[in-house]
Image (cartoon, rainbow, N blue to C red; front, side, top):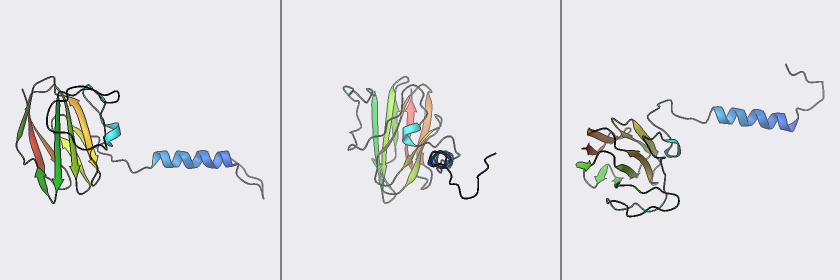
Length: 157
């Protein structure tokens, strides 16, 4: 127990430590484990990445940079006025491929990859990515939670 003498002041170090602890424990994190900040996403094999660079075309990446591992399949989606571009459809990848899904939405939302239980916050106007190794075969829906838009169906063979 801390007892303070009348007229004394709380040491600045103690006050700073208490403030830091309070901020660290109450930063508004979602209790939903399937939705994470893009910088803290769980992955099957590779660390997630977030990029502020322009969206890349929907094609394999030929080489890796120092900070980004090479991906076998880059999938880029843009949402504007509730319209998905490219239009909703099926995208097929091979089992074992490293897949990166990058989404930019004009409104804040949450991205979710069913079956892999991966997610990311989608801040309005800022690209967000999930990256994972496609180890589960099947048909998996990729959607937004708030606006309930199906972005595409991922087929892993």
